[in-house]
Length: 403
Ligand code: CTP
Image: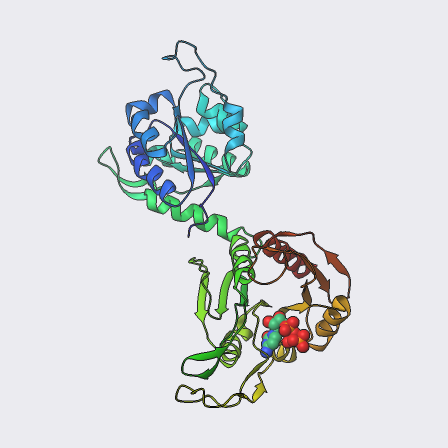
């Protein structure tokens, strides 16, 4: 899934021949899940029609301060448009428009919108090679980058003039990749690997039966989503669950038993920066697993159980730089029990769930948790959606990592 999903993208099109490629660019933004609005300079309409762009973007396209064709001439509010955007992309950006942007020459709606935008602005220059090399163009690039705008460099190749050199607007696919990478590189957890365990474990009794629990895996998936939103790579070690969240940054490792989970965690623990054990691991497993289905011969039936290995505690024993987070599901003496687990398992943070709280625990889409830090200070959170709780936990981890 693209980091552009749900983002509001304002595409500014200026009058260069590469404007014809913006039809693909709009399509790719929409395909990646972004909402797109287009503002173009009046002259850009000679290269691509507003009708094409509004059809592809599903939004009206604006190019002047007023709708001339509309009897009730409406004012196109550049300030509103600039503030609406999560990111603005000027592509193609001609030498003329770049110079106007650099100097604040607000003689059309696009430049006025650019000057009003508070979001990150990317610009993809497109011009002939000598124009690209000209000192005045270079000065526009430098000024715009000094202002904090982000340049998507032009590519080398055949130009509309027939000359060959640098000046071709980056291809639409390359523009999308550039922006996606730029967003990810600037996220606060970029470069960090987060290991998450989630869901229940199933401990087989015979080929058709098992000991399991009601964990849905929802909390673990909410944590994974929050971690990738912050730019982390996630290793998701998960017991049987109906949840799924396909994402480029999530490596999903399905497991069945507590022993499988133990081994998978230890395959990856040494290389992670943060480990969050949100799984409801079975504390016991049948001592032996029958190879054939067990028949109901007797009135009563006993299964001898043996303890599974505590995955979280085993990580606490070997951890070096990793930030280790555990969960505690309690019914009584909640705070005391959770602090005890925090100490015993050598954790940096423990997330306490009390089954006495309504809306907390298994299966629900909400949760009410209390975070307890290593120094035993406590943050009690109100009832929230698991998605929000996931983000709160990740933010607390971020604060502590940067402390
Ligand atoms: N956990 C684990 N491996 C186990 C059992 C638990 O990694 N074999 C982890 C869980 O993922 C959770 C934490 O330990 O992060 C706490 O689990 P919980 O069941 O609340 O506590 P236990 O330590 O098992 O103690 P008890 O069941 O006695 O309360």
